[in-house]
Length: 135
Image 1 (cartoon, one colour):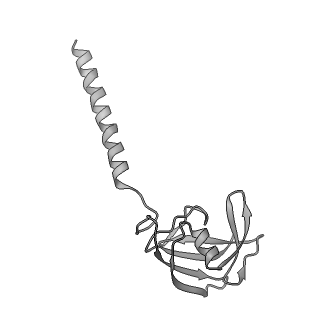
Image 2 (spheres, helix red, strand yellow):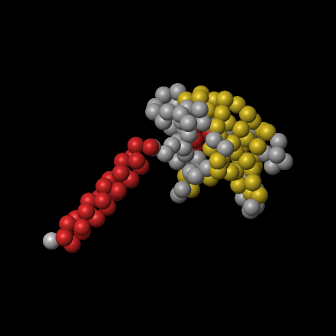
């Protein structure tokens, strides 16, 4: 009888720990940006840094676009090729990447982007920096 009670306590403790972990994860809500992801007009900062490190564009934009790809397309800031993964950015602010050696990196709020342009959410207050990178 004693081993069943001790086993039952272990199960309850384990279940309680799992429930606590779930609640904490669900309530903290990891976000890609500082602002509100809800629909409506969002204000975002865009910076495009070219091959030589010079700033090609720095601007604050107001948009209802839900993804970064849509925002860039609406503003006419990019040329791209459509792939199975979404837009592959080939040119920004008039500077074309050499596909054999370069790509446009995406930084979101000073951190290397974890999404492509088509899946990167746009949140009010976000800062997007694009840098032409040699690989």
